[in-house]
Length: 127
Image 1 (cartoon, rainbow, N blue to C red):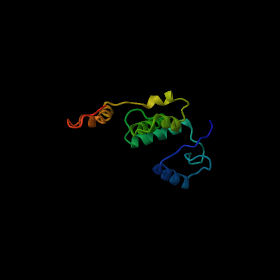
Image 2 (tube, helix red, strand yellow; image 1 turned 135 degrees about the vertical axis):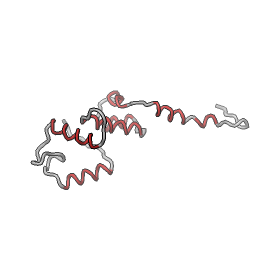
Image 3 (tube, rainbow, N blue to C red; image 1 turned 45 degrees about the vertical axis):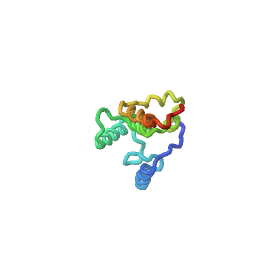
Image 4 (cartoon, rainbow, N blue to C red; image 1 turned 90 degrees about the vertical axis):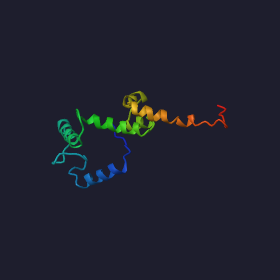
């Protein structure tokens, strides 16, 4: 798999700096106590442990964190084209999987039209 640069926020940057300060491997930021690459089962074990401590309900797996990342970006109205780039998707259709529209969001979006009802009789709109 080719390497690629992934933008991160300031909080994650600080966490990673702390991890790198005490890391055991020059190659892997997350490694075994011997500095070796973590195998698939160990990564899943650690993922489940983190999920449990975070209070995540239901099944916990590595892809769930990726899904959560994309979902938080969507909720903060980051354009889907940007999310596509961040996730490394070849097409926008792959990113569309993360678009979950909740009914609460629909009400908020429609409320953006509330100012249309504030029309004054003395100043009718010509639209």
